[in-house]
Image (cartoon, rainbow, N blue to C red; front, side, top):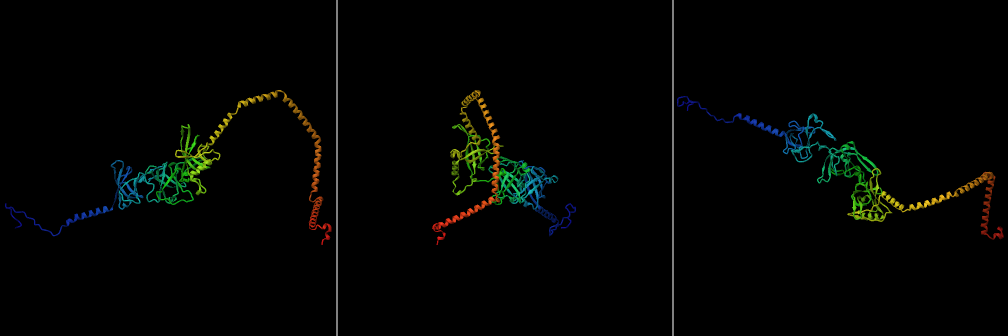
Length: 555
C-alpha cells in the first residue's frame, strides 16, 4: 500500500497517521501526581497541627465575637472562638472554639470556662484589664477526670483556681443568713479565706456552705476547730449586761465566717481533712460553749405569769448554767378551772460532776432524792433592764414536801412561786389579817379614853400638880445653893490634904528614898529569919530529942 492513494473519483487520498507504541509513560503525568502528594502532605500537616475543637454553653454571648474572642489560660492565648450559635432550647448560647495544638491535656471533666469581663461587686472588683483588650474566655484546667470536649461555662469567675494551694472545708448550718459567695473567713480578725459556694443538702434539712482557705492558713483548721457566723454585729442581752461582737466592717456589710480552736485538755486534735464537715454556730459564745452528749428533758408547771421567759433562756443551778428552755405553752385545765403554763427544759446532766461516780446512783434516783431534799424550780429576774427571766434550780430545805410528777411523757420537777409572787402572797396574808382587826372598836375605845383625859385636864388637878412641882423644884434649887456655899470649901480642903498625902506616899515609895532602902533591908532580913526557922523545923523533925537534950547532947 502506497503512502498516497487516489480516491475513486480521482482526487488524491489523505495521508494516514502512523501509530507507534511507546515503551514508558509520559512525564506529563508526574505533575498531577506531585500536586496530589503535596496536597496530602499539607492536609496531614494541617491536621497534625490543629488543636481540639470544643463547645462551651453560656447563658448569653455578651462581649463574645466569632473570629475575635480569644481563649486564654493564665493570660496566655490557647485558642479562639470560631462560631457562636443559639441552643436548640433557646435558653443559652453554644460557643465553638478551636484550641491550639497541644492543648488537649487541659480538657477533662473538671475543666472550667468563664467569660472574663469587668465586674464590680460589694465583695471584690475583677476583670478591669478587659476594658481595653476586650472580653475573653478564661480556662481553668481540672486536676483529674476523663477527656471531654463539651462544657458548661460558669456564670461568675471562680474564687480560686485548681492549682491554688489550700484546702476546701464544708460547713453545715440551719440557715444561710447573710453569707454569700465571696464572704470572708476570719481567724483572729484576719481574713484567711472566703466562701466559695453554698446550697441545700440532698434532703433539704440544712444548708451546705463550702469554704476555701489557702495555704498555709488551712493548717490552722483541726478536728476541734469551731466555726461561727460573724455576719453583722452580734448584740446579746443577758443577766451579765450587753455584749457586742463583730469582726470587721466588711463582715458587717457582706457577712462572714470566723473560726478558732479552743484550748482543751485533749489538745487541738488531728489536722482537718479536705471537705471535712463542721457545724456553723450562730455566734462566738455558742461556738465556745462545751457540748454534752447526754440531754434530759423535764417539765415545769407554773400558774403565775412567765412574762420575760423566752425559748433559749438558761436553766441555772446555783449560778452555773446546766440547760435551757425548749418550749413554753399556755394550757387551760377545765376540771380544775385554772391556767397552767408548762415549760419544757433541757438539762445536761454531765455538767454536774459526781464524786465517787462509780458508787453514785443513776440520774433518775438522784433527781428523786434531790426533790425529797427540797429541789425546786423558780423563775428569777436575769436583768432589770430587759426584764428577762431564767429558770433557777435550787434546794430549799423549808419547801413543802413534794415528789416528782408525770405530765404526759415528761417528768415534772416541782416549782415554787417567783420572789414577787411570794411577796405578793405574804402581803395578801398580811392584809387578810389586818381585815380581821376590829379597828372600829379600837377607835371607839380610844375616843372614850381621850374623853376621860379631857375631863381630868378640865378639872384643874393638873394645874395644882404643876404648882406643887414648881415648889419642889424651888426647894431643890435652894438646897443646891446651900451645899455650894458650905460643903464646897470643906471638900476643897479635903482634896488638898489627900493630894499632900499621896505626894508623901510617892516620896516614901521612891526607890532612892531611905525608907525604901530600910524596907528592902527589912524584907531581906525577914526572909533570912524565915529560912532559919525552916531549917530549925527540919532539924527538929529529924531529931525531936534535941528539945530535951539540946543540940550538944546528940552523939
